[in-house]
Image (tube, rainbow, N blue to C red; front, top):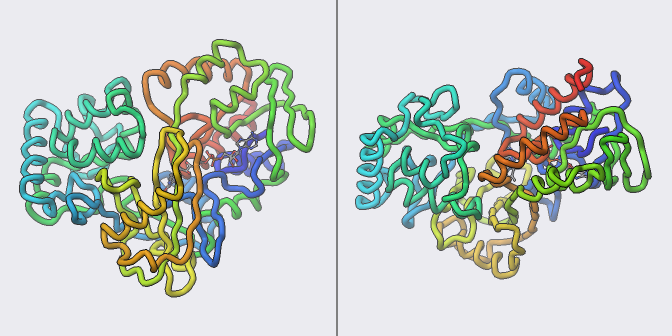
Length: 446
Ligand SMILES: Cc1cc2nc3c(=O)[nH]c(=O)nc-3n(C[C@H](O)[C@H](O)[C@H](O)COP(=O)(O)OP(=O)(O)OC[C@H]3O[C@@H](n4cnc5c(N)ncnc54)[C@H](O)[C@@H]3O)c2cc1C
C-alpha cells in the first residue's frame, strides 16, 4: 500500500509496478501533490514556483526521460529587492547595488566574522554542501539560525537579508530554528566572491538553483502526469483514514478495510501518526512536537508586464510576501498571449490569512518594486493554500524524529518524501526516495 500520489508515491509505484501488487491511495482528485498544476481562465498555476533542480544522474535521466521533449533548461534570473532597489541573488555575493552605508556594514561585518574564525568557507563554487564546507563552518544541527548566520556571514548581511528574509519565510523564532536544512539551500560564496560582489560585478551563478529545468507546457504538473502513466494501479479521490501497522490493515474512504503486506507513507508524518490506531502514546507525543508553517500563494495574471526576471526575494517588512516570481517567464504556455502570471508567497505560522487585505498588499507590493505599474493591469487571481509547507527544524524535531522512525522501523513501515520524512527537500529527492523505497521492498528488506 502506498499513501499519496505525489512524486514520492508515484516513483515508488513505478518501481514496484509489475513486480508487486500495488494499491496507491491519493486523497485528491489529481496526482502530483504539491507538484501539481491547476488551471483558471487560460492560466496554469503551480503551487508557487516549482523548478527542477537536478543533481543525481539516475533521477535526472528518469525525470527528463519522463518529460521527453516537453522540457527546457533555463539559467536563473533571480533577484533581491532591498532598500528600494534590485540586486541579483544571492544578496551576499551582490552587495554592490546596495547603498554605501549598507554595503560597508555588510563587508565589515563579514570581515569581522572571518577574523573570528567564521566567515564563508571559500571553496569558490559558491555551493554549500556538507562535503565542501569545513567542519567548523558546517551548520551544526543544534546551532540556531541566528547564531549560524552571524558566524558565517557577519552582522550586516544577517541584519539586511538573512534574518528578515528567514523570519518571514519560517514564521518561527530564528533563535530556536536549527540549521540542519541550510546546507543545500543557503549559498555560502567564497570570501573573494563576497568582496568582488561588493565592489564590482558579483557572480550570479551561485547556489543550488543557478540552472533549472521546467516543462515547456502544462506547468510542473506535467511531470506527475507523465509518472502517473507508468505507475500502475492508482486510485484518485480516496483517502487513507486509519492504519493499523500491527494488523497490517487500513481503512480507505470509498473502499473500506484493506490488507497490506508493506506500507509506504508519503502523507505528512504528524497526520500519518494520528492515523495509526496502534501508535503508542510516546510516538503520539513525539508527533505532537512536530511543527510546520503554512504558505498562501496568490497567483495573479496581468497585462503589460515587462520584467524578464524569474523570481525575487523580499526581505523588507514593507512587503507581506517573502518571494514573488513570474511563472510565465519559465514557460510562455502558462499564460494567455500578451499576459504574464505571478506567484506571490506569504507564510504564516498556521494562522489563517485575511485574503482580502493580503491581496491588496500583494498588488501594492508588486507596484512598489516596479513589477507592475497599476492595479488595473491585473486580469486574474487565484489563491492556493499549502497548509503544511515548510517543516520547522528545532530541538523538538530532533528529539521527536528518532522516536517515530524507530517505531516505524519496528513495524516495517516506511515514511518518505518531503513531509513523510519531515524535512526540507525538493522534487528530485522525493523521486529518489520513492525509487529507493520501492527497491528495498523488491530486495525483501523490511
Ligand atoms: C512553497 C514551496 C515551493 C517549492 N518549490 C520547489 C521547487 O522550486 N523545486 C523543487 O524541487 N521542490 C520545491 N518544493 C518542494 C516540493 O513541492 C516537494 O519536495 C515535493 O513535491 C514533495 O513530494 P512528495 O511526494 O514527497 O509529497 P507531496 O507532494 O506532499 O505528496 C503527498 C501526497 O499524499 C497525499 N495524501 C496526504 N494524506 C493522504 C491520505 N490520508 N490518503 C491519501 N493521500 C494522502 C497528498 O494529497 C499528496 O498528493 C517546494 C515546496 C513548497 C512548499
